[in-house]
Length: 572
Image 1: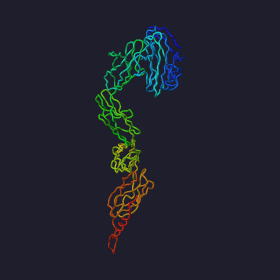
Image 2 (image 1 turned 90 degrees about the vertical axis):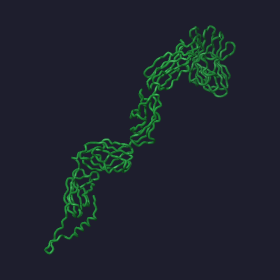
Image 3 (image 1 turned 120 degrees about the vertical axis):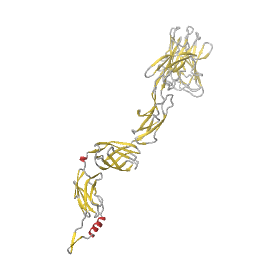
Image 4 (image 1 turned 60 degrees about the vertical axis):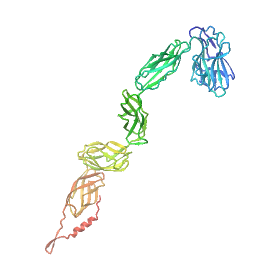
């Protein structure tokens, strides 16, 4: 259906073709009759403003090696001052296939270019990138005008086709300015600006005004672009803070029509401060609680004042140089580094992921002791990398560590001497090894000496050189059952048995044992007890009377006792 409207010098519609209702009276001719009107099932999937359109390839790809025409019926144009044909079209052509507009003013068909020319030197070709408008001036066609769309397909290759919709004939200027060659600004470290944007703008009736619009997350503005001559217009966006994304676009008007570049969305550039590069750390799986990172300074026009190291986006170190030791959390630490400039922090470097397993202390056994204690403890954990001679154990003030022995990479034993004046309460256990420094918070507790298990008494408290027998050591508190007893040099302990609150000790004193006081030491495998002493007295042989004369017992008795003692062993 053709709608004829009154013509006027102003931009008014002379004819519009409702291709949703019918074929508009268009006439299709050509080699294979491929121009069809109807529902669009291929190509764009629908018409521009409805389901129907005229198309080459209406239901699928077109055929090659053909020339096809679609003539659009026109009214008498002799009274139309500035006739312009306008249509929306979508095309996807195979290589070598093209579309053109042709007119006949009574002298045969002639190719004519649309306003601002064809997008390519060979006409409409390739892919339009969506539905796009096209305008063609029909000046001078007079009372019997003719116009058609010509499609040429060569012998090789095909495409989706050519689709035509929203066709209309206008009187007056209906073609918006053509905007092209707009500067696509790149990201910049220039914080001061300005950022110059230029564009080439043309119009069939003359450019009225060209405006550069810009915006950031915080502000924006509109700038009138100044005509530089030769169709070039320019304006400058002011300087911006670091880490600012500037979006901008250009709009132009000829007084009747307005165009925009880009047609949708905007161009963008970012103002930034350069990031360090080459962030590196330990390779492979890391067993430890720290890692050394290093990086290369950024190539920047601004001086660098220092660096911030981030883990999972949170700052963990501030350094002046290009390396840092950082703590690890384990489970996939991700680090990045930023340079610090006078204007603030710069961009983050490329992230560095470190696969780390953290050493840990499972516990210390026993985990408590009394002030004044001497005890043997066992420490265990995971990924500790313990090595004999290269490990340290620290439990704080007034606790001395000795006889430290590594049993395996995750286990050690050591002797602890708790000072009598050691502060009571919980304290941290710190292990330093190949895996770094590992802390078990509040892993050990010092208890009051008032509650400490102890040796109370010994009976007998005096023994004699050469004597054998049993003694009883009375204990108080939780002393272990597997005890060993040491009575000092010259006293052999045959056995030591825990019974209730007592330790029964079978002993033998060497005839030559040193006289005087010596300490009794009891060890229950965990704790060492002392505080009791034992006296060794001199052995005096008895006097015998021989024929009324007193004489000492033969010395052979002492020799026999000594010989028997040599065969005995010290046990517990």
